[in-house]
Amino acid sequence: MKKKTLLIVIIFIIILLLIAGGVFAYLFLATDMFKTNKELFAKYTALMINDKSDSEAITSLENYFNKKKSVAYTNEGDFSAYIGNLEDNTDESMQTIINAINIANNTNITFNGKIDNANKKVEENIQINYTDTVNLPFTYKQDGDIYGIKMDSITPNYVAIENNNLKELFQKLGATDVSQIPDRLEAQEIESIKFTDEEKAHLLNTYLQPIFNGISEEKFSKIENTDGSTNYNLTLTKQEIKNILVQALQILSTDTMMLNKINNIILEVYQDETMNISSEDIQELIDNLNETSADDSNITISVTKKDGSTNKISISSEDTVLEFTKNQTKSNVSYNFDITGTDTNNISAQIAYSGLDTNTITESYLFTVDITGENAENISLEYSFNNTVTFDNSITIDAIPQESTAVLNNYPAEQVQPFITQLGMAISQINSNQMTQIGYQAEFINPMVMWFTAPSTILIYNTASSSINNSNLNKEEIETNNAKFEAYKGEISGNQVKVLCDKVKANNLDVTVEKINIKLGETASATSFVMNANDADIIKNSILSGKTYNVTLSYDATTGYVCEIGIVEIN
Image 1 (cartoon, one colour):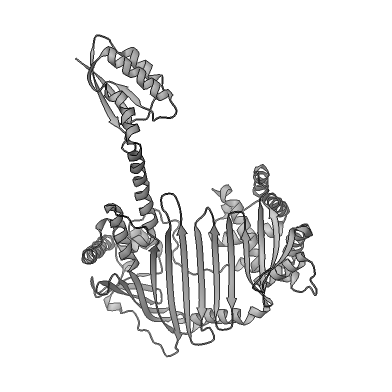
Image 2: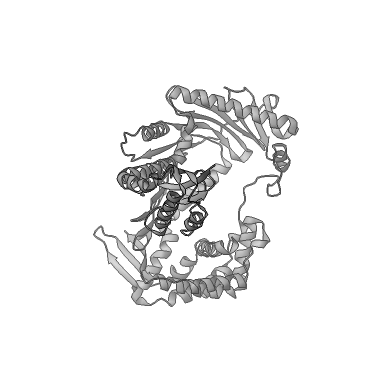
């Protein structure tokens, strides 16, 4: 697993280092004059990452996140999902699925509350809404290291855990291996990702500058668009990109400074020294890359400038386009990431913040996927999260009531495990009752499950339906094929069994038809795979002409073809 994921890890970290280290800006933004397409591409790529005109917006965004850590605020928002583009279908089973999806589309989660991160206090009222009249409310509360949930429909008390001695808690819950569980969960800031000026200069002089300078001017181009924007392009073949990657890895294999930097990041994230990358690992990757063929199709990196600023960068191949767009002002910031293609699913992610220069800020997150395929046509998924934050220094949040809070860490295993079981049963019963009220099929469990399983549910149904339909289309062909063997079904003589064996052999030698397994001394059950064609001869030679045999047939449940024949001697 380490070797398979090593290349992806290295590429990701190198890109992260370049961006976090501001290497593009370090190299190009100080240059006084850019004239060639190559230089212009470099300049506007750097501006995409570090544009001074965006500094107010970046500062506003940073101030917002820092303010959430230090100033109390109220929040109110919702989360919902939508599964769309479903084709009309009169089939009863498919209509049941569509009805379940429609209920899921009308389900949402709403929340409102108060948050004081500086003092580690949170109180959120959360409600799952199935219809206007059927819902499931509960309260989430944090008080220091205590995290609790209260559901009035089950108990008026909080059920909580303490963020300490987690290994012991999981053992009480029945876990046998807690070696990978920390005693305490804490947010981790990766210190090793920060760069010194020396490291930035090293990346520039050792990697970026030599590789960039080695790309010929003819690979760069400039296109003026009708909307007044300009694209600065770099076009490389896949083989050329492979060569650049090999060049970078060759440098890295002897670069002690960057190997140590990468290993420090890996160690800080995974806390596992066995994942360290060595020069030998890098060389192995180089060897594997050199053995991998790459065609001469093009990949184009395009940076778009409009009104003096850069707001879009894209990477496109013959059938796929990856595009990142940003729009930033002091008050409003939005980022869009899109993947579109002819043979792939389309993916889009949108993040937006508005009102950053006020005390009321709205966060919006939208993630969409368009799924296309032979057995799941035109399914779209949309997940939406909205949250409005209002800062207010006068907010107070009551402590979690100790007298009515059961902190599971404080109870022995013989009490914790039965309690969790009973709690799960109570929640399951409430869910069952509510699903009955809204007319939701029990096999789909809950509409929120359908938010994430709808594509696979439809795919399974369509795959089965397709197989059945294909069988129906070939019904006459199937009946003709099966008739050759059904003529021998029942009690027949030994000589007739030998003829049947010849027919099975001929069938199994034909690569265009479904193979048949033949067994002696057993009835047909379709539990074993086809033997080779000559097995029919072995059974034929075991058949006695003067004996009588009973022949049974078994049929493939998907295709309808005879798939197994059983032959049993009658005494």
